[in-house]
Length: 114
Figure 1 (cartoon, rainbow, N blue to C red):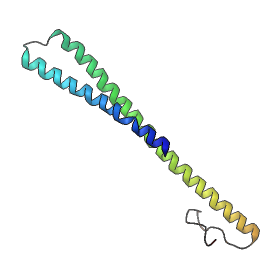
Figure 2 (figure 1 turned 90 degrees about the vertical axis):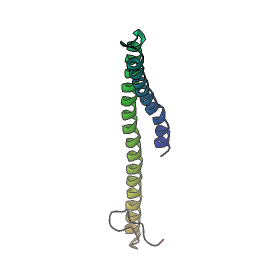
Figure 3 (figure 1 turned 180 degrees about the horizontal axis):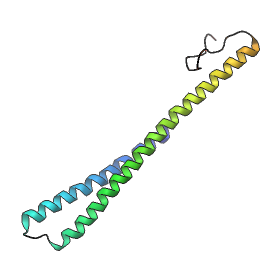
Figure 4 (figure 1 turned 135 degrees about the vertical axis):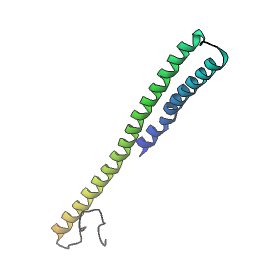
């Protein structure tokens, strides 16, 4: 779960880069249409840079969301596997002792009385 939280902390700057790029694109478009009959020379360069920033931020955000989700699923399923293995071990130990005090069913419901 710590890995999941660490990865989640990196998502905000990536999403911020995307939104910054989109805001600059909108601002340049508004400025170019409002103030000039034709766009100033710098508008083309700024537009391309902002588009690269927006697309790059969106792509990086999507990749990071997948990585965050995978780390969470990985943590959950490893926890389920570890719990199931421990329950099966208790069942085997109970069978060896012959007391029948192992877990029942899938091993996810608990281990019975101590």
